[in-house]
Length: 564
Ligand SMILES: [Cu+2]
Image 1 (cartoon, rainbow, N blue to C red):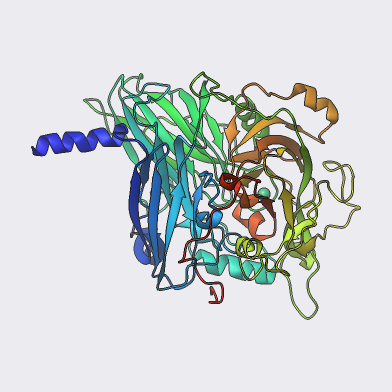
Image 2: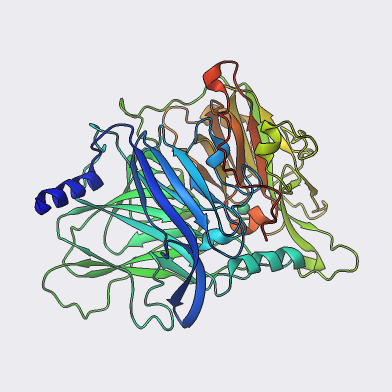
């Protein structure tokens, strides 16, 4: 009997045994002691005492309830990254966009409505910089009776994170007050382990034991705060088969580049001489801004008899600054576009938006000392608007018709046209600090062209949209030009929730606005988002009953309680 139960449990981790299940999870946010590298006496905020946090595992189309109880010292929110939350933005999570923080010593029952998502997603805190330690996998298997479009023997989740030596809320609070750079992370971790390249690691590293000739599905999540990463395993090919909760046309490569916010599903076959091989994440740094240039190493280790004491073989990865290798990987990605998983790229665009993406500087307020560039304050913007969060949530203001919380004048085009990626030194670098939303009609077919600019420390910006995945129909260096439209891929572009906008380049995305609600759109580099590289899309209700935002739950966290 015990064997049978064990067998059934193992099966349910691999295949879905029923359709449209309702699942329940408990998340306890709490201060947790942790030993990391040379720090022996640290406390971090975790969910259920785990770093990375607990896995949520569901099937396509399931509904998940997560009872989030906050016992931490300040308010937090949790976001289900890549879940569309059709007609139900109430549980989406970004603070002051769809809810106020869950106060200390209280709970919020969040409802995660899965529909089309299939593959690897993740969840993370979406308040201040708490997501540095509050994050974990959200794995969605094919629906009951359906198969993966590829074969593997075993699966395995890899969560990349950045380790800071201080409380991350204190780091960002201080940086925003002084206008200076926030602390850099000091290490990258693989499933909570920095690996043997760091002092005090005592030679320990994350270790995945493999069996020769077996194929492994690696579900890779970049929960890092501020850096894109290259990844590779010495001597082994990677086949990328999924991204951001959707399937890709299999792409064989010996390295990949993954931005913060992105997830990738990768097949690896253990087909080399039995031995120990390093798997390495190394940052992609295409900017003059300060950055953590360490790497993190885990070990891909064959079982069986061979000389285990030999130093593992190191993979050859692109150098830190190799923009062309980063781009060459990204532009090869295609969606699977099979009969069972078709692409539906919008082709009758009814709303065309161009958004200039900039790193700015704001003048230092009178009677204050600022530690940003040239004694100014760091800032960032979309279409020259540096987003300022209101004191109550935009969703609550929108739903309840409360005036004075936000303006509706986010422009569809950059307010001034200039050579975005050229010499911008003669132009002023300050943006308008304000709270604007972009209103979109239900069922609009939307194209957004993100245009990078050369202000400040230009770099790759992983632009993330809540409430939607979108097709990346085009991408390139320099300024966008209309001649690019004829080169768009409208057949099988990748369907993702986060696109790495190339440094001083552009990216064009398309989606059908079929999910009414209030949806955050922001750079997934935490320092840029904190500096204002954010916008809010309000997709209006449709005319029919099933095209409207559902009513809120009764236990929405109150907005009157201060979060700090
Ligand atoms: Cu950015």
